[in-house]
Image (cartoon, rainbow, N blue to C red; front, side, top):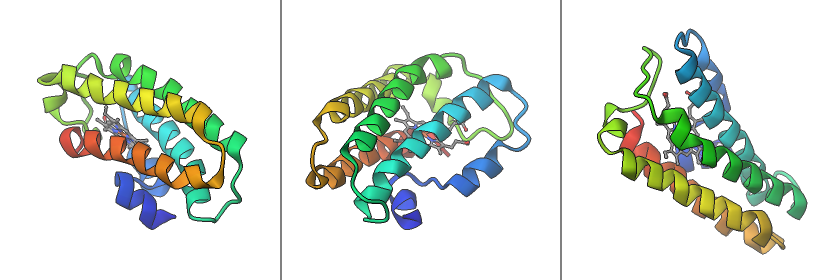
Length: 144
Ligand code: HEC
């Protein structure tokens, strides 16, 4: 599970919690909280993909729906070039904001699709792969 999350997104809940300590800018805190919520939802899907939790179509679709809703907020949460010593956001976000937003919109579309399309346990690995690819694409470009 940990390995998979690190592999896919370079994130782990423990480090996420640590990273939040000492954040002073509430706008940065808000976008970090949103990312943490996305990671929690992805974890639901990742645990099923690894067989660590039994497949539950409804729970998987709900997690995808939640990722879609969170994704819809990313553009607004990042519009202002807010900074904080704890932030891992790269300044290039605001030089390439259209690209940044389009990755968020793409993740929203993928997650929205999955929120209705996940039916059987066969669907869970591809779901994880496509969502994980979105995390990776954005983090590689825009996160330190
Ligand atoms: C459109 C770009 C984008 C997408 C898509 C994206 N992220 Fe992020 N993510 C960021 C940026 C930028 C940061 C750094 C924010 C900061 O530190 O100010 C971040 C930070 C994080 C963090 C750390 C939050 C913290 O507390 O410091 C986690 C966890 C995370 N992302 C998980 C995910 C997961 C899981 C996905 C995919 C399901 C994902 N992200 C998709 C841009 C994105």
